[in-house]
Image (cartoon, rainbow, N blue to C red; front, side, top):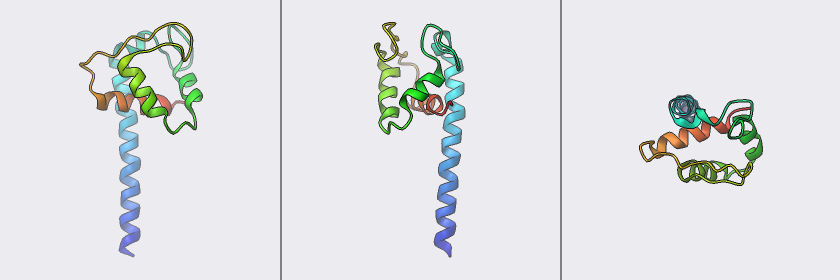
Length: 106
């Protein structure tokens, strides 16, 4: 019986941590320079966040790939316009939260 409670509590904490990361990811996205090139549902300089989420749906390696791309910059995934690297002042944990939030957009 106690095992069930422990499993339920662990699951609740995991979901809460994911929800917090998503909320924090949106905040990091909004305060960073990412908003100058990306919008939620339409392409501007960069692809729409919903398009990014759709492209990587079902790809279990997507978070790691996107965290690397956000940190280092890159081009070619959505066209020839290069994405600049994220400033070193943005923590890796913030990039991880932002990528989690971006991938949750539907």
